[in-house]
Length: 76
Image 1: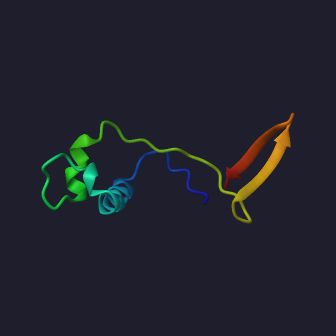
Image 2: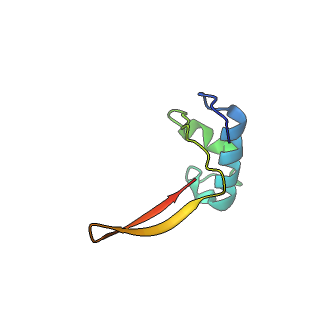
């Protein structure tokens, strides 16, 4: 919350890749034995980051009907 740094952080990329390969080892190129996050690095085309505000008090998860259409708010 309150972090407006506009560039991707290498340590965040590594943390995400480590979690991804641990959960889904099939993300590694075919034939990779004992895949690690390093096997995913060459597959990355470009890094980026999104900035979004935080929400005090936790997430908003709420259903509302607008013009007869159900809308689910889920953010924060």
